[in-house]
Amino acid sequence: MSDLRDLYQEVIFDHYKKPRNFHALADANHVAHGHNRLCGDQITVYLHVEGDVIQDLSFEGAGCAISTASASLMTDALKGKKISEARHLFEQFRHMVMNDVEDDSALGKLEVLAGVREFPARVKCATLAWDTLQIALKECGKSVPDDDTYTASDAHNQPVSIPNGELKMHPTMTTEAVDPSLSEEDIRANVIAALRTIYDPEIHVNILDLGLIYLLDIDPQGNVEIEMTLTAPACPVAGTFPGIVEAAVSEVPGVNSAHVELVWEPPWSIDSMTDEVKLELGLL
Image (cartoon, rainbow, N blue to C red):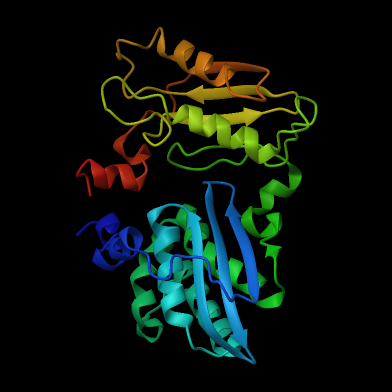
C-alpha cells in the first residue's frame, strides 16, 4: 500500500465525508477561529466548558480532507475530557505528526493521522484544529495568531515556497491602496475563486487543484503576478491559455492588473494535484 493510501485510509475519509460534531454549539462559552493561510483551511472551534471539563465541543469550517478529519476526530476524542487531559493529548498528537513514534496506540483513533509526518506540508493542516482549540481554551472569541499559521520565513514578509506546485503567497500584502473596503483575505479569496473556475482543456480539473499554479503574488497596489505551467509542453493551448487566466484574474474585484508567465520548471506531474483530486480521479 502506498504512503498516500496509508494516509487516506478509511477512517480519515469517513470523517472527511461525514464529519462528527460539525455545527455551531449554541451554548458555547469559548470560541476561536483558525486559518491556515498557506492552503486556505479555515475552522471555528466551539467549546462548552464547565469547571475544568470540556462538556461539549464542535466545529465549523472548510478545508482539505486532513484538516476536516483531524477536527472531527479531535472533537470525538476530547468530549468529556478534563482541560489538562486535552492539553496532554494535544502534545501527544503534535509529537506524533511531527516525529517517528514507535507506538501511537495511546492516541486511539487519532493514530490514523500518523502518516501525516511523511508529508511535512500537511502537518499544519492536521494541527490547525488543535491549535485553534488551545486558543479557545484561553479566551472566548480569539483567533489563531498569524505567527501560529505561518512558517518562520513569513516573519520577513517573503513569498513562501511550498513543494509540489502548491501556492506561494505574500502573507502581509495590503489592499488599502486599491479599495479600502476589500481586505487582504477578500482579494486573495476572490483570485483563488477565479482560478478555480478555469479548467484544464485536457484534464477536467480546475487549474489550481490540478497544481498548475506555481506562484501567486499580489502587491499593495493590487497587481497580481502568476507563474503557471501546463500538463505538457506540447499542450495545444500553450500559446493562449495564459491569456485566458490573465483575463479572468484581471476581472477580480480589487485587482489592478494581472500578469501570467508560463514556466516549465519544475515539470508538472501527477504529484502536483491535490490529494482530493487524485481521489476523485481514482489515482489513490
